[in-house]
Structures are given as C-alpha cells and as structure tokens.
Image (cartoon, rainbow, N blue to C red; front, side, top):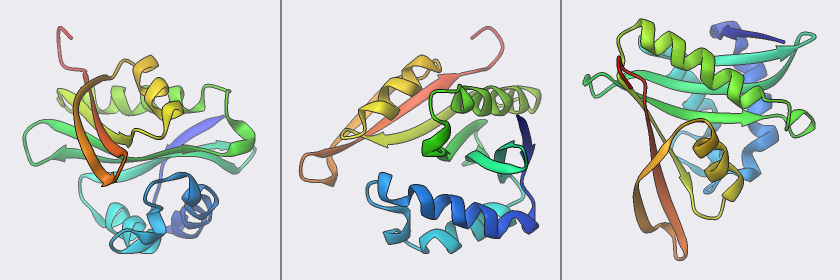
Length: 159
C-alpha cells in the first residue's frame, strides 16, 4: 500500500470515494455547506490543507483530509477520514494517521483535532486507539440525540 499527498488531478477519484462513504457521515457530506465538490475543492486549493490518499494496486482504499495549521495556532484538524468498506480492519486508518502525525510533527504542529458524532461508535473507538482523547462533547449538536464529540491528540515534543 502507498500513501501519498493528493493533487488537483485526484479530484474525481476523491469525489467518487467520498460519495461511496457519504451515507456513513452525519449529516452526510453531500448535505453540508458546499457539498462534496466544495469540500474537495477547498481542501485541494488551500495552502495548508490537503488529502492523504491510501492506494492499493492503484485504487484508493482510504483518504484523510487535513488542515495543517488551523487558526494559525499550531494545531491541525482532520476534516475527513474514511476507509473503503471492503478494506476495513487492515490498519489503513492507523497508517494514514501515522503519516499525517509525522508530517505535522516535522512542521512543528503540536496537536491534531478531529470531530465525530455520538452515533458513530466505530469512529469513537478508532480515535481512542489512535491516541486521541475526548476533550469536549456538544450535546444534541448535530441533531436531537446526536452529540458532536471533539478529540485531540498531542504530538508536540515531549507528548
């Protein structure tokens, strides 16, 4: 498996991949401001944002979107992380997170933040296994009975 940085030529492949997993997000990515195309365009056009793409035999099997220096305070934000349903359980998310962590440490970033929702226990457990800690829960933030959960992983020197 290869993990690489995306470029503008990957737009279509990232879009197809996001559409594959769209229904697993709450709310779906397609229903959020800008939809899937806007999300991808914004991330690819940013000077401090991009996607890491995991490929197996030339096929995208996972992707991680990130913003390297959110709010200019030395913190990164993972905006998207998904693995193809046919490739789950193969440590692809862990490998994507490890590549991002190293990249950010090399850039002097001190922490990574990510959000998920309370009705997604698989993501909740995955982030804990990757070394993230829950820092805040926003009750009923996504809908009645659907909380937003904010995770953080400290990656700076000495952490």
